[in-house]
Length: 411
Image (tube, rainbow, N blue to C red; front, side):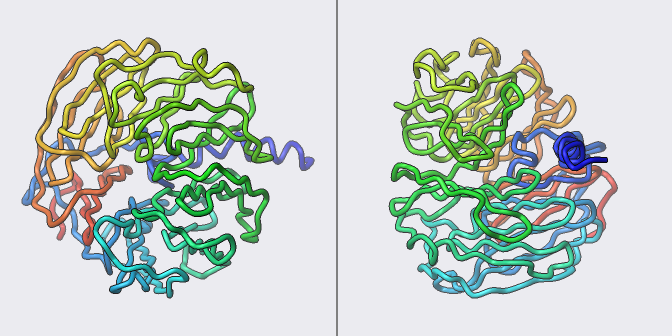
């Protein structure tokens, strides 16, 4: 097999490997919060369908990620977040397999209004990549051996934003895509997975964002879509050059774009800035790129979910909106009990919404409102994220990880 054919084959296999039922490889899984996981629980409580609970070292807002039988989580500890913690947990038992502690290259006072291990790591079949708000970026093998480390704040300047860096990393077959959108230097990086060296660096307008880059494809060309203050833009994956941008958005810095059917859906807490943008290969007139604007739907921290021709938003007071993906027409809305920090997930015919105080609502995916189950876990703090894999649903709070499973109680 010649090297060109091998490269094409690897690019073809990449999404399939990431979407395997026992993998949840990064923020929102493969970047869309869609999962093929089987046998997930529909109902649970403190005494039902909780397989195990793990107490984590330190505190973290990042999502757990999963590769086969291993769960990876990050956290911080210390008065100035000077300790960076990476932990690997056995998926079946909840038992810690290894933990590494590192000294932060940019210690900052630990405040509840600042990022606290917010960036979610990412994993592929060979390596684990971990990013912290200090700018420390690591590569490990699955057994925890460090391969390389970068210190981005040392390389390009200290981060100055009030709330810290919150964007998670994204992966292509050969690179780690890292967004730093900050009151200080702002840039987009493509870093070689094997060496930790830059493939390219694109400087951005000074901006703020907690959103994660999303890898999209348009007419066979790979793009990196990012959401930063006031604008959404796409960059060429190979070169880092800007392809298109839409400006004039408001309060769009917390939610990550969602891509489906050649549309990029953007969430915001401000009406009029929740919209769908057409993917393209060139910079067109901005307004002509907008497919629709939502009339009532808004988002706060939970990213919009695109699934089976529909898009789901949840606003700051817990109102869920289901819209037609192509037209933006509202199909239904309903209010749930509480505010969602975790992004909703889609699995089979179900949509799961988790509120920050431990409530969860499961709806049937579709154009009609149908509540399938309502559940509750007693927690301390907030539910930040969830990760579905075969037979298990992982729920992350600041200091604990819950494994929900119909296999029964094993804790």
